[in-house]
Image (cartoon, rainbow, N blue to C red; front, side, top):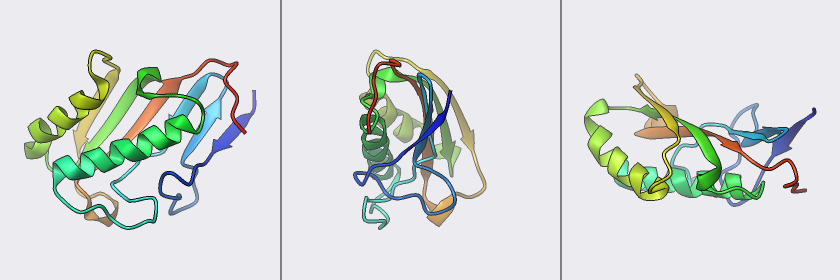
Length: 132
């Protein structure tokens, strides 16, 4: 199997030597998304607004390979402050509804651009779903 680099203009471009996502067979691995607008500007607001922007970015990256949040099997969440977990979790739950992927959530000392949240996903996609 070969590694396919995934990219979309509907989410912020990678700001380093990495891809927005990579696909290997039927698995899609997103890089961590922070609350940047597709233009590269930081989204305004607190943990709730930043989490919404992260999900807009993740949904765009997933869509680039024909996937949605319902394809997600694992999420890894990095929070700047675990005291914001309840507010974050309410927004997170609104995106997944009854779909409950595995998840790890950790507090970190610092995130890029001093944001409040970063999320990366692993999604399972039919091997027949091919996007150029």
